[in-house]
Image (tube, rainbow, N blue to C red):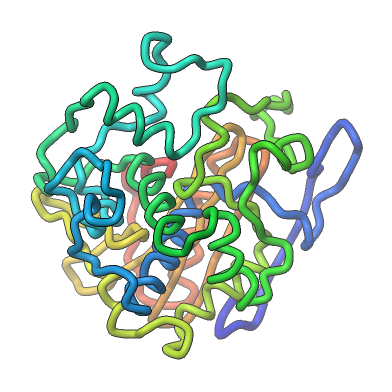
Length: 317
């Protein structure tokens, strides 16, 4: 997609094998960690509205949050030092895996168990889904709405993203499009599937095109504020890869910047590429596990000077 115009789109395969439902342009798929781009945008909208500040301490919003040094920005750019809830709660002495884990449960466990940080706040970058689970709680606290309803009000409805929603574990888990292993075996949900903010948005490419274009519109989101999202915040390790506020980036020494976010949850894989200079979005979503969506970056040189060379694989999310 360039300047909101579709250059190429293709849908193939089965959305739901058992019912023989084919994939179409209106089939919402789990976009996995690409959800973080939308969660970060919602936080920036709240900052723009004066509801919070990026450098505000999280415990001034979530008053029982037990880590006084962590700011909202550290959640956004993965510099908080929080432990990953997916591994933390996957121990029977911590959580009963027969019960769905929810965002508030994560915070309650940290408080109850006096869980230490994995590393001091703001010392280094460490990609962690817990950061965005906490951002969802902040969105809920400041809007007075549950995260699915808040996202609908701030992003999905204004942008007419009619096929996009946050999965409600209790209401939707048996209705949504399932995901599959690479061999085609359906993957069931587990106790981690009730957590949102880091994942659990279902969307279509055409809806995400609307979202992508809205981020260029200063009437939708303050342009100076959005610039802060596209700044790298982690330079303690040498290299071209960095992370902004809900967006990954490659910063070449020759000056070019490439922005993207990948996702992986169960059999769902996703990749969102945002070529800001050329106003191009490249997107691939799959509900059958495959690394092919991550290869769409190879299309970037068709639109601009992006000096990709053979390199090690990027993180799956």
